[in-house]
Each structure stands twice: as C-alpha cells, then as structure tokens.
Image 1 (cartoon, helix red, strand yellow):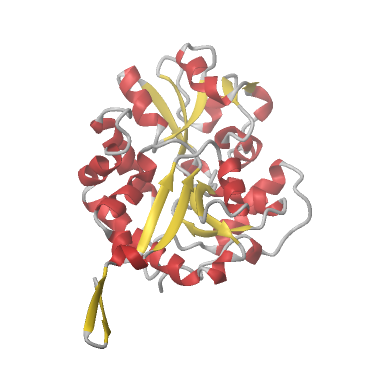
Image 2: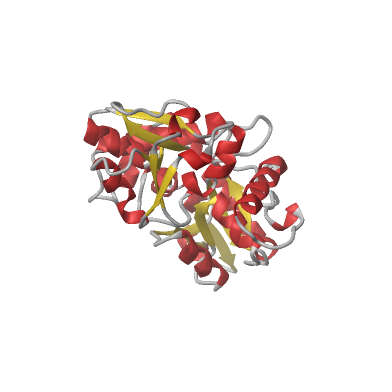
Length: 319
C-alpha cells in the first residue's frame, strides 16, 4: 500500500487502485499446463507486481491469436509451432516467451499392438486431423528416422473424435500430449498403453508459448516485464509444490478431473519446462526457432523466408 502526502492530509492508496490490467487468453479449455498462472495469481505474485491479471479459457489457437491482433487480449498462450506458422503467413504477433522448446507430444498405442520405436509405425493406422501437431510433421519424422511413411495409413478425421476412435480400436495410433491427454487416458486404460516419445526421436516442435502483438512489445514493455518476472516465480513455485498448484487450478476448474490426474498434468508440465542456466525461464533460443521454421516450410507452402527476428523476442524477459 502506497502513502501519498498532500500537505496536512495523508491519503492511503491501495495497490489495486493503481494496478495495471493485463488480459491473457489460453488457446484451449482449462488443463494442468496452465496451473502455474493460477498459483501465481492465488499467491499474489501478480498483485505484488502491480498487475491485475485476467485469465480466460479459449476455443482454439487461431481465435486466441486473433483476439490479440484485434486488441481484445494483451497476451495469448498457444502452441509455439502454431504461432510460428501464423507469423510466417503475416500475422503481426511475436513469441515473447517459450516455455516448452520441445512440445511433449507422444504417439500412444495399445499394448497388444504396440508402437515402441519409429519403425513400428509401418503397417499401422494413425488418426490425423488438420493442425494436429503429431501428424502435421509426420513426413519429416519418417525421414529423420529412416522409415517409409507410405506404409503408414494416415486416417483423416475431426480432431474431436481422434481419441475416441483410438479407444474403440478403429485406429492403431494417436498423438497426444503428456501434459494433458496422457494422464487421463492412462487412468481410463489402467496404464495399459505403449508410448513413443516424439522429441526423443527427433521431432522437436515448440510447445507452450506466450504471444503478444508486435507493436505492444515496446509499448507495454514495463508491465510485461513485470508479468514475466512474476510468472517465472510462479513456475518455480509450481515445481516445488505441485499440490498447491493443483489446488489453485481446481478452485476455478471444479468440473475438471480428479486431483490426482490434475497433479500428474501439473508435474508433467513442470518437467517439460527446462531451466536454462543463466537465462530466465521462457528464454527463446534462436536455433529452436530456426529448426521449427524449417519444419513449417517442409510441411506446407507458407511463402518466402522471413528474418528470424520476425518470430520472437527476448526483450521482455528478465536478465
């Protein structure tokens, strides 16, 4: 609380009265990946940074990015590879923090017909949908692991039915995230799943990222730097106390899965966020962006090359 002296009068100003409002939109519904934001909010980290933070669920990365471009939101949390594709196509945003340089994507299969190494994908059917990370870059995955993609039966379907089709054994393989889908599916199947880790076999695509309008990076630099410094602390708190992070998220996600499932999502997210020596959490490495842009261009025609500085900045992260 600040004290303002005006002659003989002393006026007490609450921190909330002078706090700057910041709005952040997720690309999807609530899940354990977002818990550290809620723990930071519950523990007053953003309030201490003089920020009135508003967090909101989303309905897809495209809608979240559009809200930022239109000025309806200050920040969006989206898959980094999606943001890179949008920027390459001309969207005026930048990645301002990258918490998952390697999205924690895996292929899962049933134990009676397991896929444990890339070569096991041959002669299997795999669920695929537009914009779905695990299969969007399947050709590159095949090339890097010297397997014949022509022997994999890719079945296109709506993204909402991919997992149910897998559970009903209509497809052999489906791609999911360790940080959200896998804990739920392990509970449903009693853990009876085979898991193939895509980053382990060379498919590294940027995951959880925070995006802002390009022109807001300088205009809102002061408040955004405070936001990221507070978020850095929230991530560290979550690593140390996943139960507290789970409880913070469950206060707003009452209809979510069990505490044990959410806690597993929270812990998997913490493991997916590297702690870089000498760099703040969320630091964007140029090689990560360069490799991802190569992936995007190999997968679709997105126009001529852009300078790497078009895609990201580290200017808002503490040093």
